[in-house]
Length: 154
Image 1 (cartoon, rainbow, N blue to C red):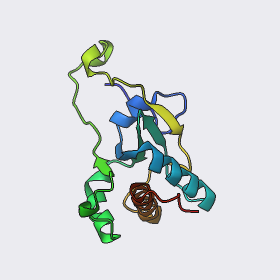
Image 2: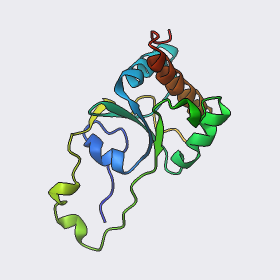
Image 3: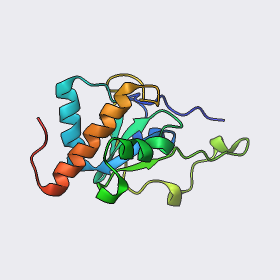
């Protein structure tokens, strides 16, 4: 069995970390605006990968399942259609010895994932971190501002 790369390891391919991590995905423009704000405020947010026109903020395992409820609790319900979506890690068991064979070409991502921030601010956020709520609120705010055509928050 292969060990997934450490989340946020800049030497590890971002695509592999995406498959092995829960994450919040959103369009790239509001994600970049949120990254700038998070950096200015000095808030931790874990690793962030870019994939084409979207970005993925990596979370600790088991966190994605509760993200929709947390967003609703923060006042950012699904009815707002912000473009945020929580994705659970791909947990596909491999048969013994499967790691020695290359993956099928049709199962590879079409676009390579790249690190936007590799391991920024420490490990991936989990449900025990108060910074998770700050992150989700910042991401939702950036998506709402983008949808309304407003400038990013200072």
